[in-house]
Length: 114
Length: 112
Image 1 (cartoon, each protein chain N blue to C red):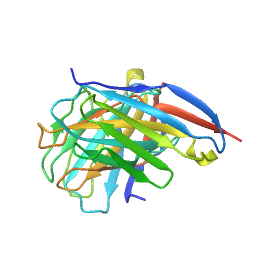
Image 2: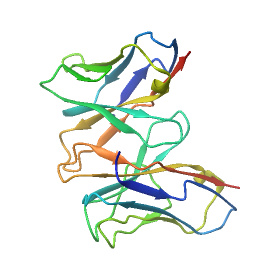
Image 3: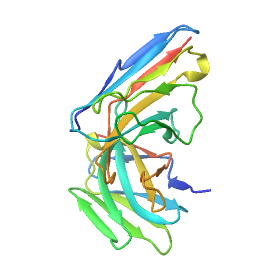
């Protein structure tokens, strides 16, 4: 069964601090991995997307890494802000579907305190 | 900001009622999706569409139905709502390559 596991389930950090969120997956064959940010009461918004050949990608203060050999990804947030409080969802797409079927993790709930 | 809209944003109804959740997008995307998400849980695909007159069931069995008469519109209908249908329903769309899905704000449904 294809699975996407995220850790930690929840995380509280102080404003200005850095943090790293983890994602392990077993989806095969692998096409790409995305990190989404989902604010409370809103739909997910894409932060980064990485294919098999990419091992790092940045979007402002967000930097995602991918190790396709160990099937692990991380999302590093630098100099956190209150607006970073959200759920961060790891999403993996398989290569075997024309639909681009997505497999979702349960997310890491990040809370940034002032 | 994606141009994909969902109404209503919140809905509280009684058991047995028929409801339709609206989803529309102005990006001209052919592919559209409906997901169900419970608090703290992953999104589950319940319906998708490749384009006009195309509808398919997703990974999670759902008693809801969908239609795709126009490219921009993908409504979801529950003929007889039950408390077990209480959840958040997210609509999404993507370009033909389907690399990134753009999500609407969601509809939070509570069935009493």
